[in-house]
Structure formats: C-alpha cells, structure tokens
Image (cartoon, rainbow, N blue to C red):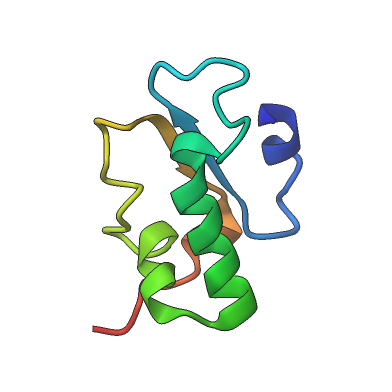
Length: 86
C-alpha cells in the first residue's frame, strides 16, 4: 500500500497505519480502517461536510488520533483540501 500511496501524486490520497494492526486486520468489517474509509467515500460520493472533517483540514479527526494511528499522512493534493466550514 505504501508504494501505491507514494505513486498517488496525481490524486488526493491519504495513508493511515493502525497502531499494532496485522496484515489481515481489515478483513471482515474493516476494523479500525472502516471509519476513515467510510468518511472518505461519504465526502467524495455524497458531499458530506461532516465526513470532510474526519480526513481533511488541519485538525482532522484521524490526523490527530495518535492513540489509534501509528502513521497518518496526506499527500500534497489532499493537504490542499480544506476542512469543513466552521
């Protein structure tokens, strides 16, 4: 996944690494990856402004959750997408 993320400079992309997750941690219901994946899709497919704040903006919910995420990165295009309107 890291290689795909590194090669994603032509589209907004986010890379998250769950602390302590194993290779198969997302099998089944998506585990800890379910919430950010759902937020990403809700923002892009439904224009959900609440979901925008989960992955975009300076204080995005997942960006600041260092208890859950051992790594969270957004590429240059994703960093240009503002957080939700205040």
